[in-house]
Amino acid sequence: MTKNIKMAQHSNTSFIEKEAIRILSSFIEEKRMAKTFFNENDKTPNYDGFFEILSTKHLGKIPKKQFIVQIKGTENLKYILTGVNKGKYKYLLDTKFLYYVKEK
Image (cartoon, rainbow, N blue to C red):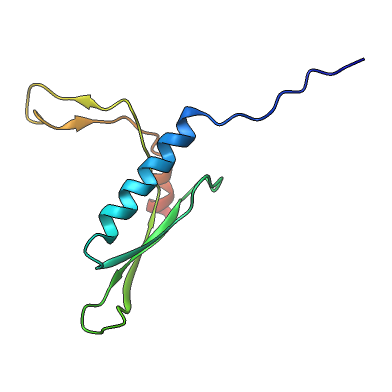
């Protein structure tokens, strides 16, 4: 008797998440005023890593403040055509991480 074994698959979401992490990391580090420490394909439910704001007073860029982040990516941005938020994008997301931050 043979079993039907299916291999794990890479979902489209995994590619979207990786791209979001890459874009955010590049944006934050662009002026070398902050350093990112983001995880790819992590399974931690509450955060994806952190970034540090760096001191500009020293050549060695000493960390001043650290921020924990939860990174979300989407291909389903909604462009707002009317109202107060005209010209902006709308993105619906799960708010569990916001509650995690509130408790911390």
